[in-house]
Amino acid sequence: MKKFSLFVLFAVMFFVNNSVFSQSSNCIVDLSSYWASTPDWTNFSTVPTSASSVCVGETLTFNITLDGTYAWDIVGNYPNPNGYIQGGNGNVINRTTPMLTIPGNYEFKITVYGTGCNRDTTLHVEVLGAPTNLTLTANPGNAVCAGTDVEFTAVATNAQPGSSTYKWFVNNSLVTVADNTSNIFNYTPSHGQTITYSVENGGCVATLSPADEITMTVYDNPTPVVSFDNLNLNNHFCNTQIATINETSGNANITSWQYFIAGTSTTTTSNTRDWTINMAQHDGQDAYVVVTDGQGCTGTSNVLTINVDALPDLSVAPIPSNTCNGEEMKLRVSGFTGMGPWDLEVWNTAHTIEYPIMSSTPNLPINSGPVDISVDVPYGTPFVHVKIKDNGTGCESYY
Image (cartoon, rainbow, N blue to C red; front, top):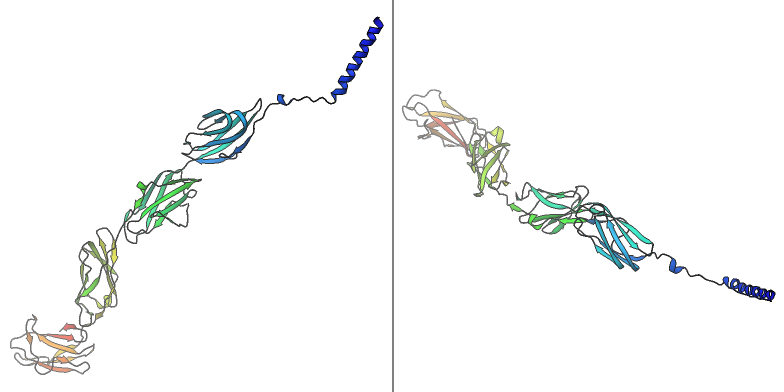
């Protein structure tokens, strides 16, 4: 009885064991539910994973679509270590930072928490110092004379000439400049034109406030006109003559006149200038005037040419050398050089009485030998003056 029982038990055990082993080769154990879940994201649209930059005064948006619902957080060192912390739970990360107002290089670490496994990435963000406190100055000023070249200078915080980019506008129209990294703009404005600019620093652009734009006042320059007085018959001056130049524009706003006579200048507060003609110094030279008005604007007149004629150089001698008082005076005129013809007159020394010429016409020939004339000089006249006028030039001499 015992032997049979042991056999049967052994046989049953053998059969069962053969059944388990025969099935072990087809046994599949599913461990997937025990693996940790690692999150992923498919869209990282707004903030790149490489270095990026924003301007001071801007915000930064994290916009990420996840492959499932996860807990997440963002830890950034702006504006100090762990100064920015945000968190949430969902299949989308969408957070916008407060305004970034401190320039510098910062990191933002985004962590998505799976089931035991996490995924993170670090964003490197540069906050650029956008130009601020923009100002504009004009030299010599915003009120100038026509034709004045004005130097406009732009100054802004966080803008560096040579590296920042400047754009200049005249009446809101962009002006092409040779060097757009220069903060200086040289321009000859017209009246009423408005000058402004914008400046870019690493992609951060700032524009001058309309209240700080410069509107130019441009004054017209005076236009003086000059002419000569006291000319002789041929519009020439006679040597030693007192000459006069007049500024005749009639501009009441002119405050000073600078006269240039044969290269010598004299500044006065009169629109008339007198001087004594010197043939050697003035003949063929220029005369003009530069005027200045009440706004400090200047204008240059037309240029006049100074032409000077020599005085008549005839010689006069009595014949004979001694004449008795009360006799008719004879004069010999010779040395006919010049333009001619000549007129001859005889006067007392005070030039108040002219004595008649008796024996010769007062109009002397152009080319001749000596000419004798008779003059009726009253008894008791000690001296006479002989006046010779060159009718060709209008110049006169006294002997």
